[in-house]
Image: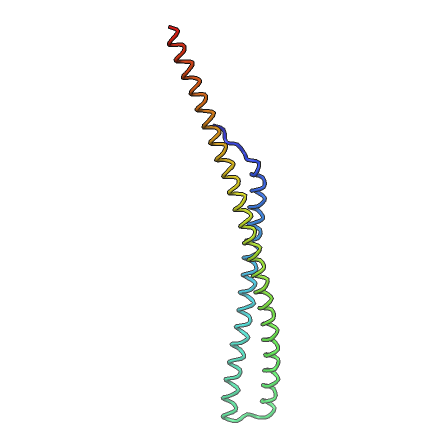
Length: 149
């Protein structure tokens, strides 16, 4: 029995390549989301430490210039946190979009795999029928030759 390449083989190869590309893009989106999330976490940690240090200094006493400088720095830090939150939100949306694309590509690939499997099964069944027919013909020939002797 010769192995035949189905008419769906080429399409299946393309669909698998598209799925692999979508998977790669999704992994990159996850990586981007993680790095943006880590940057946000670091900013929030920095803000928390700055607030704690400011509270301690307020209890012990702090010069007004230093307080103004701390407040200015805190304002800038809050702006950075807000900006980073937007970046994290965009990265999450991008990651979700890539995840949906990967799911769609996986479904498409699976459809073609199933169709290809069905086609190969039909070929196999057809080959078995042909083989059974040949065996029957050979049996008839062999029987007829034995009967003629």
